[in-house]
Length: 331
Ligand SMILES: [Zn+2]
Image 1: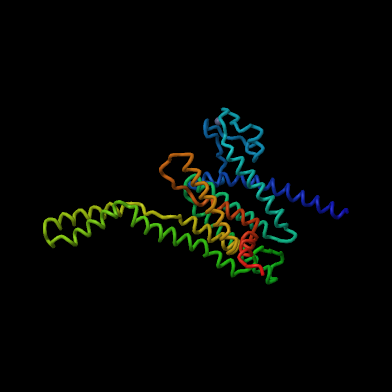
Image 2 (image 1 turned 120 degrees about the vertical axis):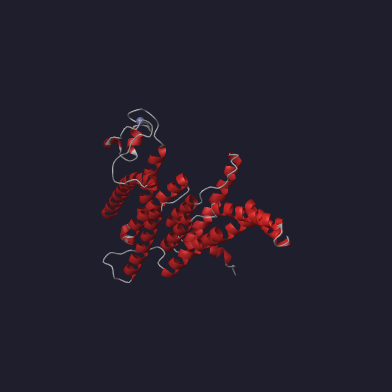
């Protein structure tokens, strides 16, 4: 009985510590989300009110709690402070608690720590993509490095070459390597081959016109004034087309992100994450169409992939296995 009590106390201690540590890290993640895309320093403390510019005092920089105590208003001018800062901090805290509850360090060794580091990268990429429709390269590289380190430590741990354990839920290196290319490969083919080809063939007016002009040129007599005129038109149109930004279905960021996710979680979990992302993005796309008349229906896909990855960080292969088991016919 006493041992159970001690275990419970230890768990509560771990969860409280994980939460407090998580919200502190979350506060740093807010800084990364805001400053990395602008190339600003992460270390200097120049947090200031977005409205009046007053420097925020150190005692008002306590994660989550400061925002709650000040009721989301600047101490100096009373302007509302976006609840997003507080939400990112709280989210990081709860995700850390979730990771340590799902993967207790006593059983999984270093894995929960590595998973928290990985999730930090995902949180930063998610909000950067929402804000700028772009993920910062250094953060993408960071998530890839964490995934590689996790795999290496996991391998060394199962080989008995590590003084501490590092047990990965998906231990198979093969699954990790296939996972690395499964979703990212599909995104690459769709994003960089199929979408641009489709766009050129059916959407781009300039390219349609260029094809028509070339056809006319072939029909025109060589050296005739008509042919010369067509040639001029073609060269000016080609110049115009070369200045256009190429159209890609997915960014390179999404592809690198899913490669890192695949390496971290293995093939089944990563494919599950992609399915979750596609379903959520489809629902969101329909919702956007209904609510706004915005013609531009393009939106960042990265945050949906990240939601998928965070979900599979907790459920692992269970959803994929449940679905696969329905494919076998009961006899
Ligand atoms: Zn202010």
